[in-house]
Amino acid sequence: MRPVNKGTSPYEKITTYQEAEPFLNTRIGRYCSFCELPVFHVPEIEHKEGKASGGNLTEWGNLLYACKYCNTRKAQKVKAGELGNWLWPDEDNTFLAFTYFDGYPRVNEAFLKNKGYDVYQKAVLLFKGVCLDFQPQSVRDKDKRWQKRIDTLGQAERSWKAWQKIKDTEFRVDYLDTIIISAKNTGFFSVWMSVFKGDQEIKNALIDSFPGTSRDCFDQEGNPIIRKGGKI
Ligand SMILES: [Zn+2]
Image (tube, rainbow, N blue to C red; front, side):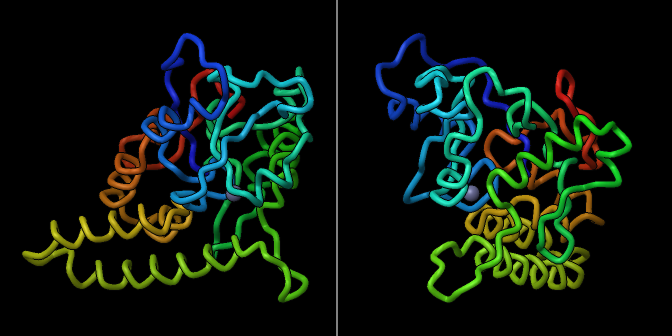
């Protein structure tokens, strides 16, 4: 899950939370803050503390993006005052919390349990709260996040193979550019990062190109590190 840095509040006061949308777009790009699906045409504003459960409606610190499916599933699970029960992509290094082997998100148990049961539990609540690994039970199920994620995995793997042939040729800069454009179009930052895990140049380009990715969550080689001030 891509960790983001929203920065300090870009407004003093807004009347409706919808007014925050252009600011969120500029700061973190239109991607679901949880499953990483692009939400270019339907950006929904997500209230970390649920808006019907006492969460602040317009405060910058309470807002993220979510896709329809993560937003609906999370619903009112986090009530006002319960922010500390979950990990959050704008507070913690959520990239450390989950793995994306073969495109399937999993809780990174080995890492988290080593950090303590408490932080593991918070990661599980977040993972289950938005059903990050949802698989459809019926063709009628409209939630196609998994399909888009698997399609993206295929595209990232093809890009990886082509990059191995091109990276030492005169076309390297152009192809690197193409990879990054593709990644920003498909979304799923973590899937791209996991396919290119052995290539620090591409990882750094992904970190720098997805708007608002928290640079301090990664070292110079593009490997995730504990976030300053975060739970992980
Ligand atoms: Zn989502």
